[in-house]
Image (tube, rainbow, N blue to C red; front, side):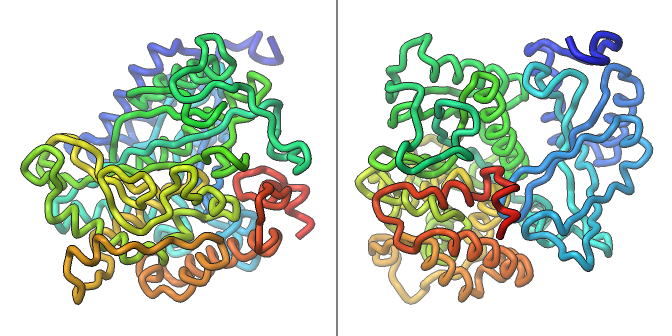
Length: 481
């Protein structure tokens, strides 16, 4: 027992209590009969009355998708939540030194209770909305931009987008395995078991069990969890939800995995291809559109898609090269796109071929959807969902080609980050998705990473593509550049 915890009883709820509270919070956020002010006042009153809460973790993602957290004293947050600022110049892809201060507002609809054994007792978490000096949503905050677009789809068309992700990761031996990576040694896996067949008390299975428990307590609404194809690889699946909540949950998914692995003396890694010669990590994005409770992607019979769904696919495939840098945003992610390992590097759709960028899963009226497979788990989820939705619903399409031709022809997505940057820079469509300023900042971040790594990566995983990876916390090393 340390410090004040022996003197003050901080809130420490059971996983069953956490699950109940977090599911109620999730449903409260989706209740159209409640205004945002109703939700805000509900949680502020709760914080005032619950003396066992000591701090509120306010979190956000930078332009690249790196996750940031600030802990505010509860009493200070209650009195100052309308005027919270931070130094945006210290965040990659945000403001410059001359205009460093940015405002951050709590998005009270994202309020969640945290497992005490993972985050410590007496804490809750809320996602932040980054605001510019004029009071508008900040252009580099992709979560806010996604939120605006989802609201626009609802007002204009009555559309409700649904997103579910399948995010894979590797469990590596030792704490801080990525920061300590040496090419000659490589990463050491904790388990040799593969798809479906790890032993019940295997280190990977123990990790998955702990991870699934925490995920369930956070209100993810678990579906299944299992070791993946590669040894020491994992994937935990949960139900679909709106795109903003899906992005929030993906960031919490990776955070939970990393902390639980760290507690067990291991590292949960979401590098797309940490080990050569075996399957890499993907983040398959399942998308559908509903209206008035009806799935608009359903084509009328089992396994069939609607014209809206096929148009969505056509537009995504047409702009595949332009959005490749968003879907695969790191040097290492292009190693994963190797067809020898079920990698989806072909710009086409298929019901069965897993090398296709888009797959159409077997489904009924409720579950009809498309699965975009060419997404790496280190991508900014909010930017990914925004780019896929805007591209699929509004993006350019080759109207001159017949449908059968444009759906069957085979092209390949870039096989290195430098080509992806070139496509991204020259794309007018990207500018329409995220704006010119965010586009230029994103290119700058990606060029910096690419320049620190060899252009021809070869067969071995290099130190530079790990050390300078945007999700690996190497501040001392990064500050030298």
